[in-house]
Image (cartoon, rainbow, N blue to C red; front, side, top):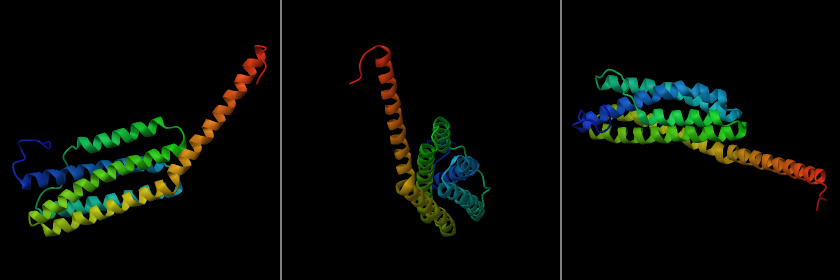
Length: 197
C-alpha cells in the first residue's frame, strides 16, 4: 500500500499507513547504523552514531507500544523513501576515499535520515492527537524529540569540526597536487631544454 493507494480512504488509514512506514524505516535505520559506526573515523561521530543506534532500538520499542495501544499488530510497510536515502548514503560512502571527507558525507547522510524521520513523527503526532490517541501521541512525541536532538548534535559536530577538517584536507591535497604538478612541469621543461622562468 503506497501513499496514493486506494486502500487509504480515511485519516485513520493514513495514520496507520504512516505508522507502518516509520516502523519499517526505523528497522532499516537500525540495520544501517552499525555500518556508519564502522565507517566513521572521528571518535565523537562514532559515539554519536552508537548512541543513536541505542535510541533507534528504544524508538522501535515505543512504536511497538503504540501499535499495542491501537490494538494493532506491529508491522512495517515498505518505504521507498527511506530505502532511497539509505541506498544513496551507502553509494556515496563507498565512493569517498578520504576519511575526513567520508565523515562529512556520513553526517550529511545521517541528517537526511533524521529529517525524514522528523517529518514522519511530526505528522504522526498531529494525527494521533486529532484522532484522540493521546497515549500514542506522547510515545511518538518522545521519538520526535530524540530525532530533533540527534539532528542538532550531528549539525554541531559538522559545523564545529568535521566540515572544517574535510575542507582543510582538501586544501592540503590541492596544494600537494599543485606542487607535484609544478615540479613535474619544471622537469619536463628541463628535459626539453627549455629554461624555467
